[in-house]
Length: 457
Ligand SMILES: Cc1cc2nc3c(=O)[nH]c(=O)nc-3n(C[C@H](O)[C@H](O)[C@H](O)COP(=O)(O)OP(=O)(O)OC[C@H]3O[C@@H](n4cnc5c(N)ncnc54)[C@H](O)[C@@H]3O)c2cc1C
Image (tube, rainbow, N blue to C red; front, side):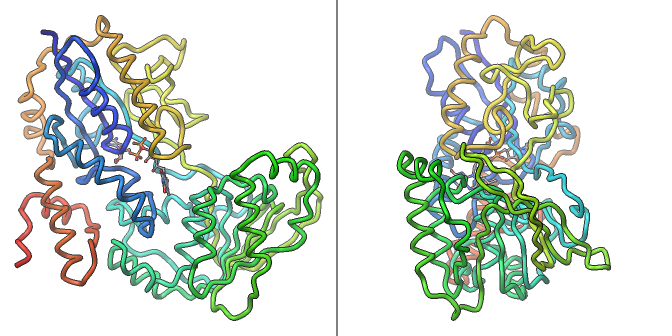
């Protein structure tokens, strides 16, 4: 029987779902899958993006883990495509590859002052508080007033983590260095900026509502933002999600404020135009233009410029994919150019046989974890139908890739390694009455992977 030797690069939800769907699919060939990830732990942004105080979403890891624990997918962690293995290596040992490398960088925001000290990307901050091994251990949390630019869920995550009292994060898996960093933060005011109105936000109701539940944090809204026009009223009447969001905001407007030690301000119709230098190369204020609704769901600038003193600014204006060596890349959209997951030559849009994409690197960094499943279905169905056009590898044996990694001195981890690290993190947590404490340094992750955790008794 024909056998598909498949490499999947990226062990986030998209990569794991693709493997699972292929293994369960009706097909007339055998399958052998190797799943590579640059990190010693799988799960991508579920581990390193989803906020630590969202345990329900982090719980998706349980379902992903069940797929891996079946044992019919080999995992090679701590292996980076582009340095440890290349496209030529994959062609030599596999019939096809699916890239599921996601997106970890911040999209740019082109306004003056973004280069100032105190101006940060939300993605970098998220990577820090979620304990990503490739980011610095310390984060400069020295601002009393902070601006967050963006009206999506990542802006909410960043604002919530900044405004929340760190003791309330202690029951979560946050690493020790993150707890210590947040405890030292003098923050009192977090200002969130959206250039459009309250009925145009990209927040989801559940995530928005959570802000209002923060202990000792007042929600501050401004009456001038709620003078709805006909269009806004129509949107509220016709869209259930917007209706709920509006209800939440209206409830907050009725609340008494003034007693809390921290405040979270929501500024709508506010388009940031500049970060102002405090004279020492640091952010001293954010300048923004007041906008107004144009009656069709858009906004126009009114020319009225305002300024709020802040000492730090986080831009949460979207994530962006990174190019992979030897693989086409669409610089404008930050994705691998593809047709329903079949990767295309950048020049003439013709298919590159044997190369596929799925998840955020396929369709851009929007959508929830669940969306990566439908994505994977589409990609996998093309992979199955393309059988006649797969690569013909010189050495498709399962041992060959292991030998290659060993020869190159790559310290890869496997499924047992992940179990060891997982048990180690849980043991660290149990010792302090917590479910888990994440290990951050890569070498420590690899060390813990390579030795079984001592039993807790
Ligand atoms: C801050 C934040 C919060 C979020 N919160 C939620 C939420 O609450 N609920 C929800 O449903 N969704 C949430 N999402 C969205 C969700 O995380 C994504 O939909 C999903 O993770 C995308 O999956 P992916 O597999 O395409 O990419 P990723 O999850 O990014 O996985 C990609 C994997 O590829 C690996 N990789 C990258 N480059 C290489 C390379 N060169 N070699 C080897 N491996 C490589 C990475 O290490 C990573 O493990 C959130 C996203 C962010 C950014």
